[in-house]
Length: 258
Image 1 (cartoon, rainbow, N blue to C red):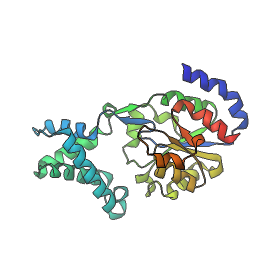
Image 2: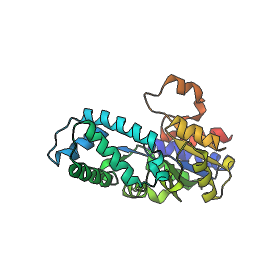
Image 3: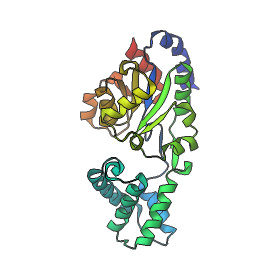
Image 4: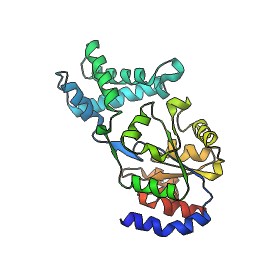
C-alpha cells in the first residue's frame, strides 16, 4: 500500500511534465526471476531420469557451457540456422557432459524437459512491486513494451505470470535477429511503436545490455540496482538513473523530465 500511495501522490505532477510516450522493459531479473538456481533445476530434472548430480557442480558446468555456446553461436545461433530450442539443447547436453553424463538419449530427453519447464510459471516468480508499477505506468498513459534477450518462450512466460496484458508488444532478440546491446533491437522497437527515441525510456538490470544499449540508441535508460553490483559500474551510472526498487520508477522518471 505504501508504494501505491507514493505513486498516486506523484501522478498529477508527472502527467503534466512528462515527455515520454514509450517505456520498454527488460524481463529476467527486472520483472521476473527464477524460482530456484539453474543447478537446482537441472539436478531435479536429472533425478527423474535416475541421475544424481550436485546442483553446485551442474551450476558451474552450465555457466561454462553457456559462455562457450554464446561465444561460438551468439543470439541462439540464428545466423547459423539454429532454432533457440536446438541452441539450448546443446547448452544442456554440454552441461551434463562436463559432469560425466554421455548417453545421447538421456541428454536429449533432459534437454526437452528443461526447455519445456522454463516456459512454465512454476519456474518463475514476479518480483515485488511489478504488477503495481506496470499498472500505474499504464494509468498515466505510458505505452509499455518489452525488449529482451530471450527466446520465443517469453510470450508464454509473461502470459503465465499474468504480465503479458500490460505490454503492446514483446520483442525478443530471437524475433529481432539481434540482441542487446546492439542498437538495432532498440531501433526496431521504436519503429514498431512509431515513437522517437527522445520520447522513450528503457529499464533493465544489465549495465551494458540495458543501460548503455538504450542510451546508445538515443533513449533514456535506467538501471535496476541489485546487490553485488561492482563499484566501477556504480561510478559510471549517475545516481538519478538508478532504481533501487520498482516503487521508485515514477519518481525517477518525473525527476528526469523536470
